[in-house]
Length: 505
Image (tube, rainbow, N blue to C red):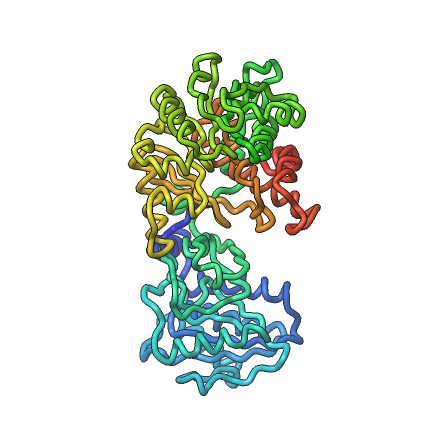
């Protein structure tokens, strides 16, 4: 799914109006009708509805919602914020229609003191400002937003299209923004919904299709995308019935150290579950028995060092590896750093770099420029910060993420709630599978194994990154559904990976 900017969304509306064709008020009615239907599915007429409307088209949406719910027997009041002397033509039209049929349901709000006292079972609808917001809310309207947020513990708040005050294309740190329980947005995710700093605002987002013209959607390029099943189905390649183990590649996993062999085992198991044909693991001597017993499907190569991997460079000359995954449980010994440099000097194919291998790149930043083009780096936010520096907000960090992927010609997977995958061509994909239960030790090691396994099977780096992150999150969702988010471990993600292949694609 493409993620369009606020300007592009306005263009999509205009294109639809011109080419469907449909009038602007009718398109507003279509969007509001979807919201009213959602509200009727979730709340009965015993819940009085309090709608707070602005003077723009978002307020017009709220007025149409009020009209539709009143027609269906709901008790509704609509407060019109007098934040401007002018109103949009569509808002005026819908206000007039509502007042003609239900003259007593609207009232003006010119200050926080005009805010009504709400009964216990009331539902609040925020239709003050939509995607047109370009600057923070100020003055008495900000006071209204804060007052709405004060009601959050007692009443459900539902925002229409955007929580009022949330700027669609930016981080909104320290701004006056409605903190909704639910956001009913139209047609597309907005970038703001996917940025961690905006997490308190949108709540549970529901995207409602309103029939924007498909020609605009397909013909208009977008920098940002949301990964979905449709994309995954174009990437996934079913197995060849005449294949053999050599068909699906031989991967080398360089991982583990004394006390951290669990990371290597998790990564190896995930790599095998992702479908690699053959897997060799370069591990320190202390991990030999652990790996052979824990994962007999993996072959083992032991380092000269008993406790650490410090001499893995020669391995790349002993077998025809398709790719290398390096980092889980690796540690950051000086000998490990030297061997990593020798590896990067010799290896020319895309590889997966995670965990302590990333930490070594941050300690020796010149090594970043030796990373082969097309490689996949998988930092969490702190690792990203150590690699590329701190940022003042999420928008700046997203720009830096994309800039570094383009500059280094690599794929950078910035892990988080909506993991961002930055590509060398400047595109960024957000992943929407996964859940907080995956915030547990070893989850990243599992992802490294999955990515390594897919790369070894000749998936392109982009395909491996998108599909690997999607499957990792989907397997985590399946595990959480059966075990709870609290009880699941990283090993459970591996256990559900097969089901993720079956159901997620």
